[in-house]
Length: 307
Image (cartoon, rainbow, N blue to C red; front, side, top):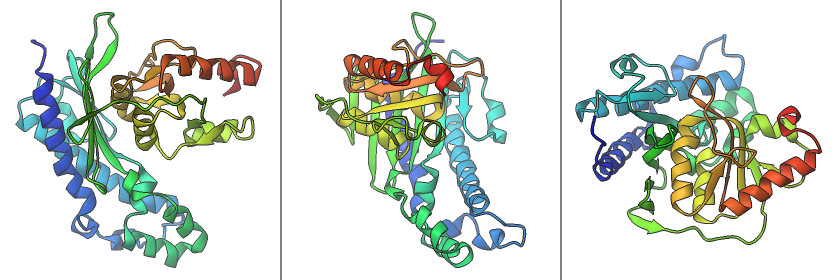
């Protein structure tokens, strides 16, 4: 198979993600009814939220997969967060693979749905309502990337895009050609300070209180885009899902940043091919190495055992 035209694929990614974004911004009642979840066995607010998000996840993912098939990319592989019927049409061991995260920022999305919030407030009380309300719907996004096998037999992302439908902002990158925001190339604003080390919820709960530099991230999408544009902080994740961190790592590196594992080496995928064993993103290789040394020195023992 010949190498794909990455510029054409970049344009296709933008077209698909912008159309998929309407599934977020149009009234949710068009796609599902909240009466479905008004059942006696709905005991936890998290269950209700998961039901709503899973519905939209599958809807957006099916839309993206169908568009890729329509455009003639049925010989490419597919890695998608939700398992749907269309996945069977994609060869899993193809030279090139699409990677889809249909909804990055679950709580952020739910906080943008007024009817959902009213339901949470009425049924589950003020405390649960406020926990959802504090999220930021503008951080919700859809991510689509294309990866292939590089010269060193490593999986490398070749082109990617992330679309924030609530703010109508589209970021993209092509390997070797830079990162772009709404069509304009941007370069990272280097930060001289070490900054905070932001991490996801599971890891933050394990490391809470061990260092003031460790804080909870708002989510992979907004955190990595912030690193790509401003470069002030570092993002740390153990067992990071490829669906968001993989494509977005290309935007970080093409803007001038660096992505490694917690030892400063190339981040490797696990045996499933769906997770990086560890993931560390910063504004530069130097800053990443400083973060590696900080993690090693701060915990005084093998970092793998610490978490």
